[in-house]
View 1 (tube, helix red, strand yellow):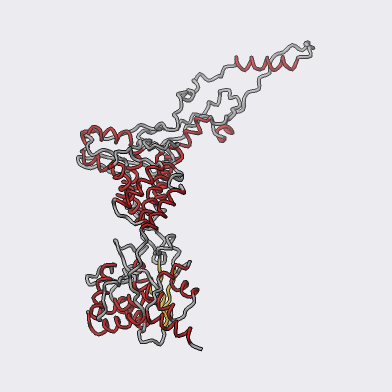
View 2 (view 1 turned 45 degrees about the vertical axis):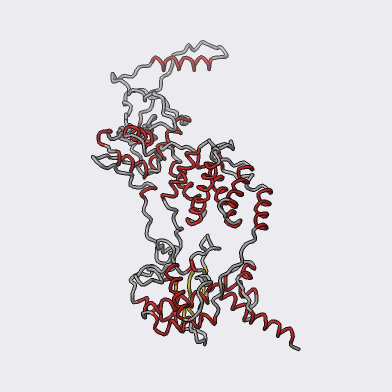
Length: 566
């Protein structure tokens, strides 16, 4: 419960029942009065006698409750205690302010940092009040007590006390070199370990540094934007005092909004915002300017000066639009202007996109690569790992990001040993936690069956699982590892793919790690699979797979032979 005791203004129900009954005082009234207003006369006489009645006890009554004005919603309910400035160092003050999400200038002096710390800290309750339980004397006359409803200010104080109780109490102690932070703040929170059967439940966190940069950028811009909008329509420009009861939920809401896009996309948006800022600086413009002239000029500047293709320009505009929503809490009308769409379409026509030069790694090329790999090109452990990755990438129509890592390993998004399971003697299942088209992490299962084929994908994965099981102690360990026992990265996989292609006598110029997905779609189309089957195998929701299907001279010749046959 709260440190602030509840002040009892009125006797409780138990006290009321234990009080002695009020002596019955009968006023002396002349009996010969026959006035019709006799009842009113009796009531007036009774009140006068009660006012003149004095208790027999000589003890004084308890003093009435304090009549001091109640505190407002944002006032502190207790005495605030802070460490003196002499016991704080500049580094410790910077550490506390930075960890609490409070932005400050690196050129600030110690006194300025201390003032910011004092003005931004949550008050500490050091006062201790005691309940006053005063029972009325048995000889005193007790009139009936009527409980009154709490006033609006008393309700506000009650809400402040309840909110302070619900939040974790903050304790700021300062030593000669460090200042302790709250034990349960957002900046020092530690995620609980995920259960083994719910590895993919926790979303990937946004970098604390990037989040701090974005929040600092928006706060620094403030109301300097030319578009005058109500700052209350956006959460990111709403200034809430640290002792506000909704402070914690407001911080949690803004952090969750930044989780709406993936960390990689958020970094791309931050890059686009930096280019937008550099454009303003190069043309001596007030930043940021979201007018139609500014947006169109920025697009033309990116294309003609920085040689950025129209497809990438769309991503830049998405990043600027994202920051506009954070600043103003609404859509940017100028970015959605039809003239901007026509401008990008004109750039696409004047500079048509280059054809995709990536070659498909078809079933025939896969068979050659596996023969080279199984001939003893690498060590047995590395051979089994790459063999399993090649088969899983091809028959699962996988993107390279779905079975490798490109950042620090995170069991909630990257493949772990528990994601590859033997269902029975005929089926192996691979669980994809998230993908490019599955940002909400619904997940998808890929099945590899035991089929009579020389490639033997089921046998390859089965052998790999038995080897990997003897190397791990937890099901949350990475599924694939490289030569240094680190999670297999995209770069490591592509480097070994090129090495195997070179050893097989196949030019490597137009092959990449994505060639497995392109080759699987091409092979499926060549073998006569229907569009529905290809979309199901590759998890496509549209006919985008058609851009992956490649046709060579042999396929065109076979198509003409079919047309010419009778």
